[in-house]
Length: 95
Length: 483
Image (cartoon, rainbow over all chains, first blue to last red; front, side, top):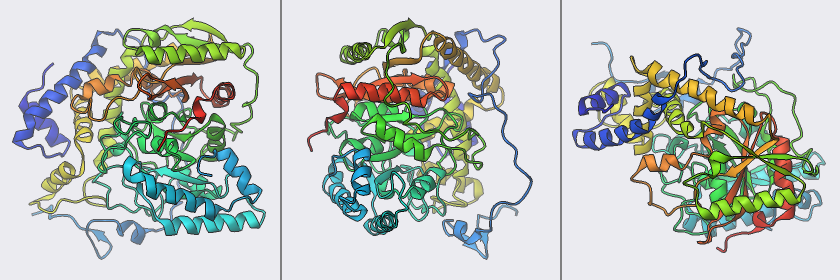
């Protein structure tokens, strides 16, 4: 497998990371080296093996459906880039 | 005083031979004098530290102290700490002062420990050399031209340079054991789920695990007593009774079976490292242990499996850095999508971007089964190897890394080469097992070498027993760099 420059541009778009034209070639080369390493996996037969997501094979704990957090809007918004009247400001989304 | 172990400091504080304020001041002075050369600590706040130390002294005077009350520590810069900058080695979080504290930070504070500062680290804990920090590389205190190891390199270097008696750290693919090995200090990564991840900036959630780095195994046991334990706020925290990790430190090693995986001593292992590990095994045999050869046949597959699973989880975890609620935001953008793209391009360093892109790709439509599910299946094979091995032995011994610390800059242009240096540590995270690194010698160039001890699930006390007995019989852990 070898990623083309178009592939890299598409991945960058999906990842929401701006990658300039000048960086595409170098990024493609590095990603291809990493995928070269990863490809080794494909030679292994894993038929019938159950994927492992958690070492103890435990299911996630559920908690009571009750409010446990107190309102800390001010503390959490104090670290936001832009807020107004208790709301996070972002560029206009709807035309 | 600043050369003392955690245990010694705890005793001196209890006996009122020193106050917490005196102790904190001495360490702060040492940080001020040495840190400019090492870059191990990124944030110091003398006033905050001395307030915490004065509170600890009051607690000691009131007779309400616990074993570690008044003892100073450094937190890795990814444990959220209320009122302290929590930068995670990234430009993305360089303006982030946490509004809350991680479980680990709360536990240390509840024990009365005093924060000296925050340790430098690879950005978002991604790296094996601590060269990926927004704050610049950490220098190895044994040799300023060498890497300290990553990603907890600041924590390990700070302990090695005696800037602190103990530091918190995290290990996703070896990030406690490998820098501990390269800096000649002792570090333990507990069983996955033993230490809460609440408030720890997430990298790869199914692999990340917090633990301590200190001078000795005995100190690590004392710290684990404070750090470990069930926390309902982390859904993967294990509901187990609290335990005393120092309970077995002085147990005899007679009859203990230590497994030596033949794959850990194959081609690629540096001769100095092999010799140090062999000598450590001989030492343990003198103490009554018996060595058995074992096999972990899928060891090499841990590299590709890890470099699928960790980036996949990182790409989801790091999607929260979008410039909306906290962290860096780009200045110039025409719409929301461009704001995301520029914010993330400016805020993340190269290694983080690489891993996010790898993760995005392996999780994308059409590739999920071929990469992510495949890697999770290989993860099971690796865990099964360990299961079989622990049928034959009590603990597994081996090297931590193929070589002693390499030179700063030596591998930074070749990420794949750097990834290969994690071959002995990654499988432990994939399986969720506990692992530790104990100083075991020096390479010909004077750089430290660690011995890795791997235990079965929840066998931390047994591993600490092996490490403590080894440290009673040797003095590698007591050696400090000349600074």
